[in-house]
Length: 250
Image (cartoon, rainbow, N blue to C red; front, side):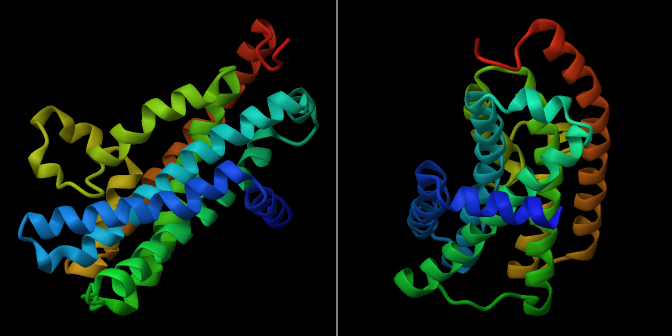
């Protein structure tokens, strides 16, 4: 796991697309969020806006990083080798998804620093001693969720198409930047089953006040559930991909 994590972090650091997504996109999100919250007369929530923009960046990094990694393996012709290797394919996917979430952690740090330095956002988290653990929980929970996403991407020849479709809805339903109270009632069950929503609650509670421990535990529990679903799905996905011949581009 440690070797795979280091390898994929180094690989992501040399990808131009991933660097743009990880380095610049969160700063754009943070800038827009700060201006929107200021225009909406919510100056007391500017720090939460910066954190929310960072969470958006973490999710985008996990989603596009996992999809991009699977797609690159398919383009290079190594996906078949990874699937047929004696090592379980789930153990191959884990360092990929956790590497993307670790790179996405930069988004959280960068957006907060960007807001404090550029927009004079006061850095006064309600629970400063819980902010770092909550951010770590967020990274772990999203990494575990990314395993299920990556398992789905194995079946699709154009994984990035699914990543594009899932980017906006997930962070919207998770209440990362916009409160879920403003969403329709039918979205509540979706919110409850997303680890991203509970991880976002934990981080936002650490910055703006509220309970941090309970949403953190729920996020980790749901993330573990997603890992279990991924292990089950991978068995079916591998068989389906073999029979349909979708592991390669030819």
